[in-house]
Image: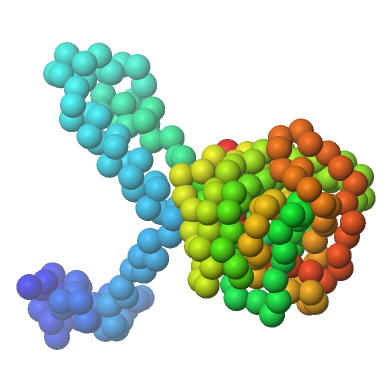
Length: 241
């Protein structure tokens, strides 16, 4: 149990009682107040920094005595341990999550097969790789191809990268992982499928571009028709470079 450093009722009482009360000197008076509890929000940045520190300590402990001693004198005024740790503790910020496209939800209508369609809603917030795609099919879909696109003119778009997902069962959100689709900040997500349908809406959204036939291959470029207000349930998640 924690104890005050001087008698509890004396004018010089100091210290804390458990995690509840603490005694402090303020001018000529001794005050007692509730002991503050430090917050530990465990943000991604804090957790990443703690892991960097743990890794650095583990690296130091793995050194031989001779290897540790070799750090002596390299950093003036620091011990070998302090010098080693200062070289190891380089903060690596947590990766930025990427998301692209509208939510993969059950919607009011559907988006039919045979067209390359590209969502304008929610362009990519960063550049990197999409590793996950989520869709909600209205009817079973075969040979689903998903790609990232960017505009070269107002309604002219070019495919940046693509992945073949193949079969998608209807009736619920379906998640496909382990993908590797290049994406740049500001890109849009689109797809092509020769049969089936995706859940869609025809109002209330940023719209989508469409063109008949398959244009979901890297480097393919075409002029698209724009459907204002439309959206389809196609969403991507990735990690920034």
